[in-house]
Length: 332
Image 1: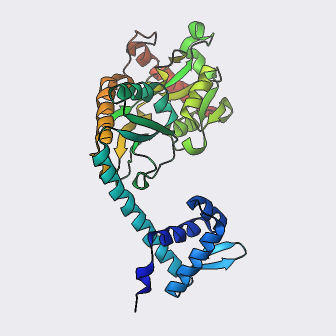
Image 2: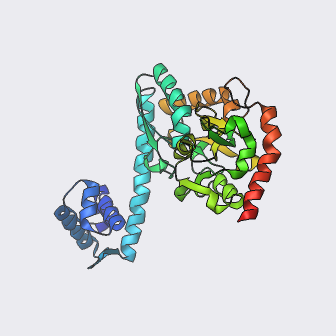
């Protein structure tokens, strides 16, 4: 007599997982690129073969049973194995050719990583780059991205990576601010502020400003670091930015010292299964070398060639800046 488990296929597991994830036939069918009747028919066949009910059919949708949960867990494990093996095989075959998906944040991409990517592509024209912008973690284990370039002090333990620099943050104002030349840093105590919100409310800069600046003086918040930079350029207020973004913008002026409490780490991350792939290794090596040459920018060590304040000027304003923040907190 044939074991019913032996009749299960990978397609069966994919259907079970899709229904469990979506709780309904229509979105599960859309996820798999088939029609709802096919999903219903295949699901009924699997339940009949196994002699169990995998989902309770309710008016509100499909609710997974205990047996269904076990098969969904199995589907998750099988999917990871399939992706892992496919990646290793693909990596050995492709070498320095093929598609390369990179995920990073808007602030890292704009002026910093884009030139590096262009330089890399000029050396490896057979590698096509796709960049996914966002601050939410993508699942590298399932192939949503090949490389993640992240500002974080807690990279996922299941990924292979390297810390390439510390990220410095400092306060910036719009270069077009008419009061800069006349009142300079003294104007900070009366400034309006740009800060962060939403998915960026975990930033150290968010907490730092919220604890020190009067609530009424924070007139603009955004869940995008690049958006905060644009708001500062537009004259909405003073705000903290990574130096690699603020110092590269010709429309921004650094108006205070690097704040050590806001330091972050810059990591290049990939999945261990593909780290030796030719295109992965080539891109990560290229970025490590390129970032090494720009470490002074990332870590906020400025000169005066760009028209920014010198280190001496910045240090001389540090005490005044701290006083300004404490003054703002005392008003709240």
